[in-house]
Image: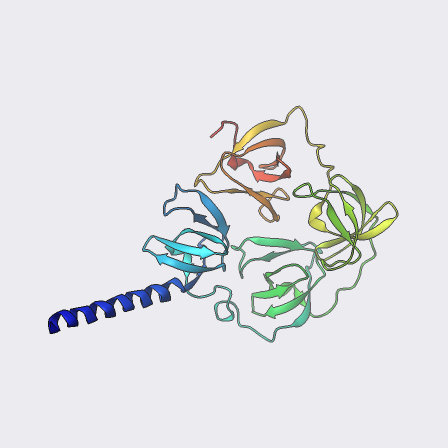
Length: 320
């Protein structure tokens, strides 16, 4: 009788320990750490051939649900899926101890280049990290972390890393405004684009401009452009402006192609012909697109309401 009671007690202890371990493990947090600076695939199953649910960038915080030697089940937001265990780390890659030595944060600074060209703001402290967005020289920002080579900054719209050599506390000398330049509004999803009273997202909307609207660019400030359309003047995000009128590329040389990828992952469509441009959207393998023109190895394509650039190596004329 005593032996049976002792076995029962041991079984209860084991069950409690297992339950405690499971709960503790389920609440474990981890961070995505890409080996080559590209986003990592979150898949529906623990195989490379399964569907890609999302693309996770370095620094994304996730909850570990089931850790394995090769694949780990995680939760990020409302999604649950699998990621290769080698792309997870227990420490935040962007924590002060893992980047350059930090100094007092909150210092107002300006991002300035010697040649007046735009400067890339990246997701991490190095040129191997993806570009979040190029910002014009003279952009005002807040210094979050300062290092000898790279510093973390925050502009009105983005937070990321730039080379420390491009930062200064002195306000750049304003240059005379150039002559107005003609541009065209180009929405990412065909929805109207807000023209605001000031160069901030919280500013009052003074007009809604549809794709194809011709405007005059009067000046730029950070990621914003001051424009005039008709008798109105306001500000619009620069990424919604194009030197080409939407649809003017459609010629007899246009043809149908399909998205392809060596690893089966989604392919990025960008605002310009190069990896330094902001991502418009990601297209799954097999997506049908219309190729409008080609520029130095990049194809300008249209897919539904989206229009942008894809590297030609990810396109094929044969349906996958």
